[in-house]
Image 1 (cartoon, protein in one colour):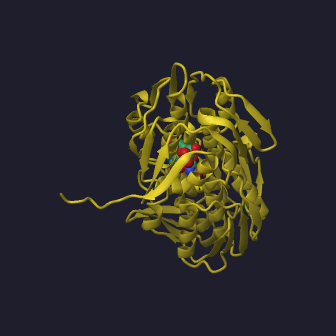
Image 2: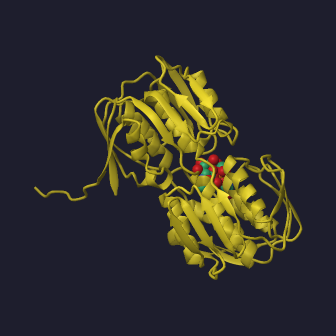
Image 3: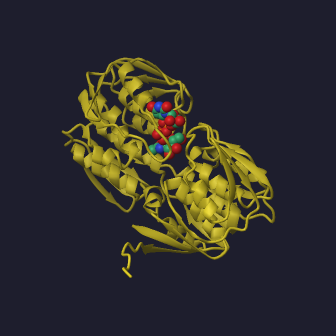
Length: 423
Ligand code: UD1
């Protein structure tokens, strides 16, 4: 395991390029399991999570070649419709193979993910969707067994769920007849998945809205796709620029995917120079506190809640940050407090008192975005911070330390020393 050593208070300037979106490529990789053929994906980020999904697909029998952000997938050799616990427990998104495997094989065995650092994270909506499409679902030894050929149906989600929408959509494209998904998620990653499925020959209407109509097809085919830039990575660099930037240019920041964040940054007094997929950001002389509540897209993403809390420690006054998607997703709060942040946590609401002069300290990563918030805080803290367990960051940010170093940050990756010297 590695850790980052960050010496704070160096201004960031220059350009950074955003990688392909983790949450877009994972369901797209899973979708290629739907039909035996060859697929080529471009702009695939080299992350622990993309490698985990590639490994899972190999267990299922696919051939995957991944070089220089280009991934070739051959799903003609798939013969084992199963996602083992060892894979699913390391990455919940492995559950995305449920819909494609049920659609293609009419039977599959996929481990239940279990809880995580953000709370219980159930999969009831995924299972409800599969049952509505006619799958016989049973639980055996911690595994979901889905059996039966799928038939179209009316699937209504009482909560907007990215994963359940993705799984249901993938299952529906090969189901016999019409499927209608209502209150479907419309995050750009779901729109990206729907467009990829269309390129495979699926018939989907209503893309980009909360109602999706799918007409089941008898056949699909292989295709090629360019993965959209990662809006959460772009947003993390935008917030970094707003905290410590002296003209930071972010290439691959799609305004249309970042509306809620950009509005909040401007409300905080940050001036953004926007042009086609490039946004320039600097730290203003004073930052205003801005309250924020997470919501499904196009609302403010829960995946940016931790970074907003780090940002608000630098604002002139107090702000209230509420997470309505994941009520327990606040493991970063006590770690930020170790750097001197003043945050009161009550239920799903954090009240941040700013401005705070943060002071470097050893802190620990707990999940991908919590870790990103610690990096942001360390970049503006006086002195040196050590962030341990950065494998969380490696799950979701491609070479984040190199990108920050390229902007002038003092950040170094070192191997954690587990040897305790005996006295
Ligand atoms: C995806 C993202 C994750 C992001 C989240 C919300 C991927 C790989 N991960 O996760 O980074 O934080 O969307 O934008 O894309 N829920 C249920 N039952 C279910 C499924 C979900 O109650 O069966 C609830 C969840 O507990 C949560 C809400 O629905 O409160 C939204 O979760 P969901 O959109 O499903 O998150 P993921 O797809 O797991």
